Image 1: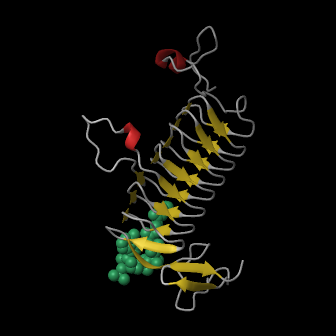
Image 2: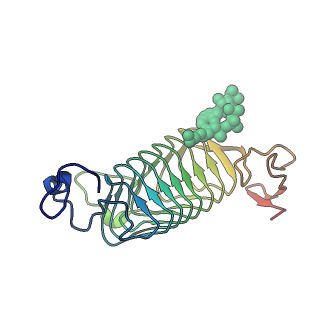
Image 3: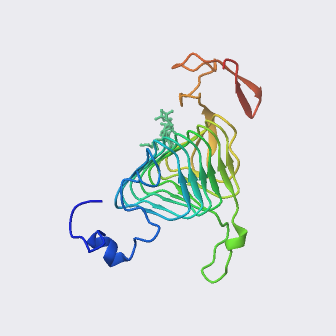
Length: 221
Ligand SMILES: CC(C)(COP(=O)(O)OP(=O)(O)OC[C@H]1O[C@@H](n2cnc3c(N)ncnc32)[C@H](O)[C@@H]1OP(=O)(O)O)[C@@H](O)C(=O)NCCC(=O)NCCS
């Protein structure tokens, strides 16, 4: 708990005012999740699973039945859930909402203020909670700042979505996508390096091959 005014039960003044002590994490998270850091300004509903080594920073809100793996970092003002699963080693930058229907596999990077959606044709006056369309972000994928991912899509492993892109369909693994609507303009390696005509990663030396016009695979593991 941070310092400041406290009530008789040891609650901070802010807890008492907001009535937020039930089920919400208001501390480092050590008591509920060993090895997890939860900033005191974050709200963690119950039940929620958080893996060791994960850090949850200012003003985040984690909704019920969310599972977040190990060694993840959630920046300021990130909302996750309900019923969302996030893998290990993901980095979610400031101002991202990971809504119900979205799944992030291991090692996914979500750039600042990128946007997920879960309904294609929302109306304020029509209930569509049973019509969420899933979005799957596969291992190692990167979503650039301010990009928008329309629901019902799968972002293939290690793809890289450029800043500001609008993704409207499935993305093949290792694709480099930019624009509105997003189009593939090249291929990137596991390390996020753009591949030249030789399809060799300039950073790791790993070699790739086009197994099909839409399918890049690594020759070296
Ligand atoms: C898409 C991206 C990976 C391309 O990087 P790059 O290969 O170094 O590209 P370059 O800067 O050489 O630009 C190549 C061309 O693409 C254009 N371009 C680059 N990024 C673009 C984007 N996001 N959307 C549209 N066009 C883009 C450039 O204007 C340039 O166009 P030109 O050839 O007509 O001049 C990068 O620009 C990007 O968007 N990265 C995401 C960064 C991010 O969001 N980080 C979040 C954490 S801070």
